[in-house]
Length: 274
Image (cartoon, rainbow, N blue to C red; front, side):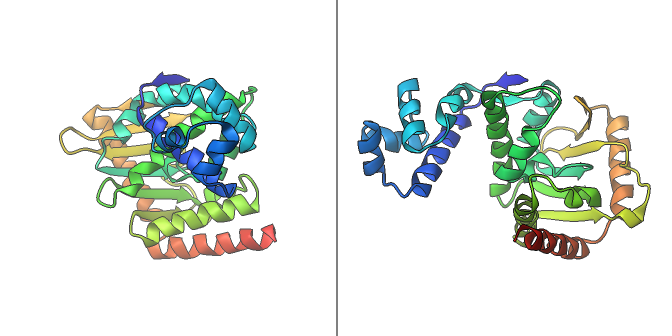
């Protein structure tokens, strides 16, 4: 796991504090009374302008019944956690004007909901502490913020049908996740294409790929396998990845057909969750 400087983490901490405070039905003034933290200090924390100390975090955890989340979250204020092999690609992702990504087995990270990401990050062959998981979760959710800007980047995604059929986190989590993708598409924030099982073998069958274009530098490709990943900048290799993506796109359902399928599967998960 790599830790890189990220000033946005303090703001994310504040957003999480506000979300949990409001979910508990508390005003800033009432939370101030219960935690013995001044209302002004709480306001600054929620706005991302000030970080709490360990004692503050422990009081917030106790009053908001957060299970130690705010104390575990403290180390992320000074950096973001990512897999070592993804650190370079993450930097490129934040600069890209166009992103075309393929989800082979999972929803791509920038499209994941909190609940879906939590379940994905909680699995693996090696035990992982809550602190390690929370660091990774914060970074993954921050990546999705690039979709808040309507103009850039332009995001296209191809999802293997297996991705929307695989039950990650349970029916309710999957229903929420798929409807999140539909909402992004309906807002014209992303274009989505599903590669149906009926397509059989296709050009991207062997792995994950993310293609990125930029205003002032050549495009790159990031390919990933089990516990490994590599950024390709060599024009010939990048072009080969682009061609593979284009060929797979030709085998995929149209944008409208894909959304119809995703809505149908989301409804199936909704019925299963009842």
